[in-house]
Length: 334
Image (tube, rainbow, N blue to C red; front, side, top):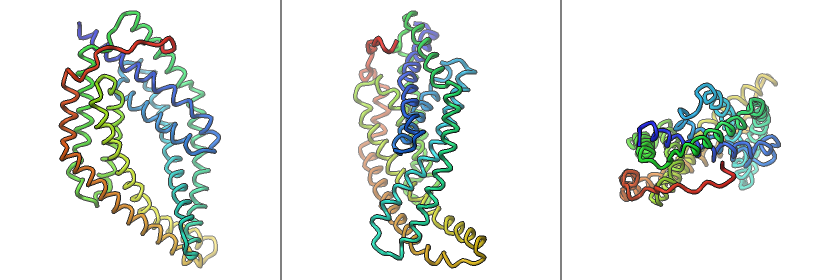
């Protein structure tokens, strides 16, 4: 089989991966617009991230000018959804913290912060709607789906093989690259003060996980364990990052409230009532961060002892782990 045919096989695999992910983005748009259930924003954000992960691998398989425009539109909606989701998570968590609070002296600060987060989320909804309107006006998902369908149909008519050896070679290269990017942060695992680096490690874990999920169907069940492990690391580092955001945010919020009150009233008699609740919140997140960090290090060391990453490297290079038969195409996927 020629190199061109093998590359076309890799593209066919990629087009199918994109086709699986593109329609999911539009499924949550109504819920995002309604803003009644925070899960809609979460699900659409995840869907756009998964689509972007596939774009990163297979963008060269699509028309260049259109692909760049589609990617730009998807990136724009992901960014708007990300900001809204972050606020949703903070607001929901803070409501739980308020419910569990028994000291009345803490309530003013927590309630003031809830008010500001609610106001911030309302402002962010306008940005979300604007990005969603742009996505739909440009027919980004519709055009992408149409282009993918046409390309897949043409490849099948030409009997392109999506399980050619080149496909496995390039899958292994993509996974190995993401794995090495992730493991490059190993030197920071035992340095809890390296906030930025541990956050970057979480992002690298997410990218590795999405890449593994894209190519998982090419292999037997060998990728299930590393996908589960990387997801656990991503979640532990995500919890750590959430705590870091709170720890950094509370003093800045207090300073902003002080400036706002002083500007409006010419004096600040409010902050003494707000600070106990804000200080308690920050202390709680500092304690939680220490626990998240301990859990992360424990899990990381267990993965090292189990030689999980070495096993992953072996799994993606052993021919016996490959699923070489292509699943039959359903009539709806043509």
